[in-house]
Length: 350
Image 1 (cartoon, rainbow, N blue to C red):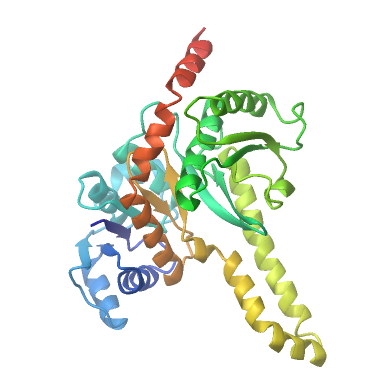
Image 2 (spheres, one colour):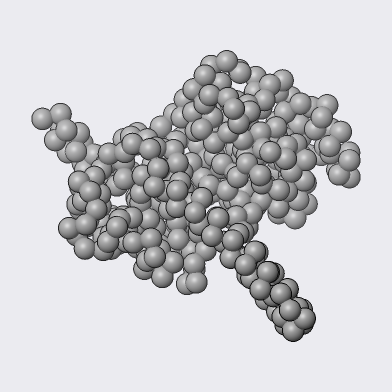
């Protein structure tokens, strides 16, 4: 049975949210969890929330905490007993099948990169997350791990995210697009045009398990034109934060409009169930967190302000992908295009 290690000290609401999420994951989802952090604080928090250690919920002590202010590169070398490092180590040594952290995302990346290591042929791991759209969901990679990228990296983000999407939704051939400022092939940059050429070639591989649709604009993402979007971490992170901001702003505007007059308030009472369902469908907590693709392990990065619901969903998501051996399937997808990576390296060195 899979065991998920949770960095219980990293989030803005730690360890309250992490403990609440772990308890819910154990009780409601049947997961097995090890909470990593200050054992005394965790035991007190468990008691305060009416929980206790069991065969499915254990504690693992860690004396240090990675803060949001810590430098991702330096903290990896300096805080050797942080809850983040210990949780990652538990995955590496096989004690845990995956890890979850709502801590410093850059630090999570550095810990996973240096401890779990990259998959063969993967240039850099990428962060993928699913967004809701009127016609379903779309997965985007990268969302902040890599600001400067190469065409090969963009191509790998597309292939990794496509495999992730296949497993998540069971779609045999996800549609992959590259984010750009227009759908015409002449648009974009030298980087995106080169990535499109590589992805088009990869999609024609006999064993390819995705279709390439070319460029996709920001508006096209929400029109159901693609299932997977490949982009650099700089653009992807801006998209992520903008999407979160817009959804929150829309809800505030709707709430303001529906409480502006007595008649509007009456209508709001009738519409409340539908509005609450809509709010839930677009809230980040429903999707748990963003997965790190391209490392030899299963790791989920949560929003810093994640509550217990978000942590629970992240644990359940990580548990599912750990049991389905996601990282092995991703490695196989990259390996299938080994000739493409080797040819690209030869061209770059020529």
